[in-house]
Every structure is written in C-alpha cells, then in structure tokens.
Image 1 (cartoon, one colour):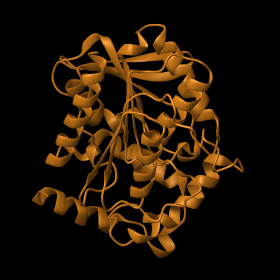
Image 2 (tube, helix red, strand yellow; image 1 turned 135 degrees about the vertical axis):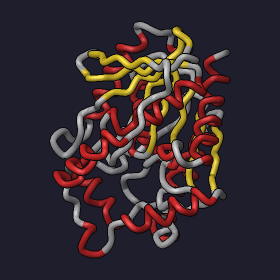
Image 3 (cartoon, one colour; image 1 turned 180 degrees about the vertical axis):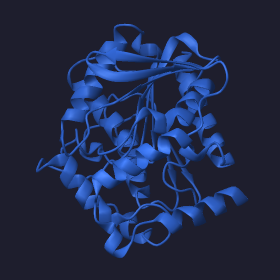
Amino acid sequence: MSLRAELLRLALRLFKPSGKHRELDLETARRRLRRLEPLVPGPSRGTRTETLDAGGVNAVRIIAPQAREDACVLHFHGGGYVIGTAPLYRDFTWRLGAVARASVLYFDYRLAPEHPFPAALDDAVTVYRWLAKRIDPKRIAVVGDSAGGGLALATLYRMRDEGLPLPAAAVAISPWTDLALTGPSLQSNAAADPMMDAARLPALVDCYLAGADARHPYASPLYGDAAGLPPTLIQVGGDEILRDDSLRMAERLKATGCDAEIEVWPRMPHAWHLYARILPEGREAIARAGQFVQNWLAR
C-alpha cells in the first residue's frame, strides 16, 4: 500500500461523520458538492466532451484521444441515489475511457428523494435503449460505482427480463447491492472503513425506496437471478463496510454460470478509483477495469 493511500485514509477519517453529525442533510451535502465541482481536475489534453439528450435524460459524452468510435462505456455514477453530477466525475470518466479505448457516456438519472425507485432504473434503461440504437451492444460495457454499481447490475436484470440485447461486459466498483443491509461487513468493518458509516445507510435506503421492498432485485441485485448476465468484474476495498455486498454478489454471479471476477484490494477506501489523480492504486484499479472492458469489447 502506498504512502499516499495511507495519507488519504487519514484524511478521509477526519471527515467521516459520527455521532450527532450522522443525520442526513441532503441540502447541505448537495451544496457542498457543488462547491467542490470547480476543484475537480479536468480531462487530459485532447479529450472532447459534449452534452447530449439521451432519450430525454441529460448526458455527457467523454471522448479521450485513445477512444474508438464504435465502442462506448455507459457509466452509472454513485452517490447513494441522492447526489451525483458530471463535474464530480470528470477526472474519472476520461481515465476510464482512455484505458478502455472507448467513449464514456455519463448520464444524470433522477435522484431521490424527489424521484424515488424506480425512477433511476427507468432512466438507465431509457439511456441504454438510446445508446444501443447508435452503437452495437457488443461494443458497449456498463461501469458503475457504489450505488451506481448496484444500479448497473439492476439495469442488466431489467434489460434481460425485457429481452433487450445486453452489453458485452460490466464492471461494478464498490457496488451497493443489498439495500436490506444484511452484509456482515457493515458491522465487522465499521471501525476499519475510513470513509463510510453504516449508521447513515438506512436513511439513504428510505430516501430511495420510499417504502418499496428492499429485497426487490431491481433495487438490490443481490436478491435477483443473475443468469444470463454478461462477464462482470467487481472491485472492492478490503476494509469497506460494503465489502460483503461485493463478495456475495460475485458468488451469486458465479453460481448462475456468469463469467465473474472479484478483486478485493487491501485497505482501499470506498470507490478509491475516484482519487486516481493522487492515488497510484486508483490508477492501477482503473487500468485493470479498463483492460477487462477492452478485452470483452474486442471479441
């Protein structure tokens, strides 16, 4: 583990909510993130970005110089289904596209609590349908982080159930796959996780589900039938409270015959890929995810 990773863990722990600061204040959280947007580094030189209307859903297409014109990664952003904007991901999306040698399509699915389940899922399917009319699904991969990782897997279930052609591959980064919150690591990793606090998750679940069944496969893919899903790579930090969401999801995928790989990265924080600008492990993890995508898109 790099020195930078250790320093990042210390910094994250300083901002980890605890005690009276655990209350969910979305207005404040969203305002603070908007202030951070200008501080997120832009893409590499030569990268092009364009805003799009993807079937009625706002989207941004990122094209790194290395990207092929006939390949695309559909990116599902994280944020507990309640936050997330394109500027916060601009240092991640171009890196992913560069190593995957594909354009990246980021989209703004509707957020809870204003738009609860299944609004985000509906938007994801709409965007995929739009994209699949323009690019062969065999040249599409889906990548999601955190809640976006769970949403990506749930979207695959729904598209399979509706008979849509599935993408060539999927990557889930620290995915939240169990909104019923039954993973043992929620407790066993509570002290070790430098970033996530399990005490805040029930409020996020309530915002997103608004009374819907937490074990519905389209909300929590851990409880679905994973048969027929495309080759999938899951990456998760060993100290994450959501570690077991990844381990159990990988087991479910493998049990149904899916070509699934699971990587557990020791001492990495939640979705450490987003710190790739300063974290060598973040750049390495993106490179591995990009190579996985590239391998399947090339077939």
